[in-house]
Length: 424
Image (cartoon, rainbow, N blue to C red; front, side):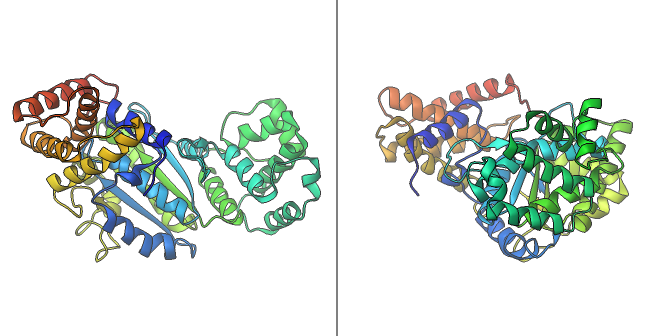
């Protein structure tokens, strides 16, 4: 699989700096989860979801075990099957699950506009997604677009569509019309409304003129989310994939806030399954959440308990366990290392001795798994190996000793522990 120098550099920069995967390009060094992705494609993306079904999955893995990496793989799979994707990265101190309006706003804010030809970055936001979709239908919108047959057909489709909230339908149509006419004040008001933001009295006047007489509130937030999904399907996408990442912090919120958050999470699960056609909700958690938090809440436990992890032979299981991959741990890391060598070479337009660097990958993989660590050895290995490749490229290539490998690992442990994303 060929890769450009800019994308290769983007991958290496992310992995070498923090050990975290880039938003683009994970397929170039992905290892060990092919059977999971193929099963998800077969049972959901290529069939059930496209036919209007809804589903949820819980991705379970320790800090640094590859949860973000796996969600990026799901993102690529969803795009390949013409689904829209919203990827929500939760902060250490904030979760939207104590207010369903915040769930809607998080999805609207993080809906991705994906350009197939653009290698590194995508843009986020519901209105950017709508603008990109309109451009895909009719080209760059100008005043003449109002009479373009593709646009008039789009308007007719939306007007006839069964979208739960009439206000939502009118807001979408109003946004397209204002975008084409370059009516900035109207665009700003509709954008704030669609994004679930606070609207002003002036916004209310403009919105009422368009027939948008409802506000997005906590009680109607899920009806609005359902209306968003219905709109996305009417815009010729197969559905919406909701990826919620970095939720390690949920396990430690405690008390009344934890009870409210878990109850609302249970509602998200139920609503995705029953009320969001063509949608999959994927929630990434550490094992502590499954083993310690979930058992305290019977309603949530009933929905996420599993008799064995998800697989091709157990496709109904809600739990995807990242400790149960296609290859064992050392083979996994060694194979990742082998894939990173040519990516590094492309990134820096250099040539390395593959035999030497493969040996270094093996030595580092052994050192990472043998040492007692506070962070996952998978993430640690990747960051360490990219660092070694840079050092070897800058100097003379040589095979690491076991002592050197352990010293490098210890150095990376200290660096990760002092970073912005410490383990829970």
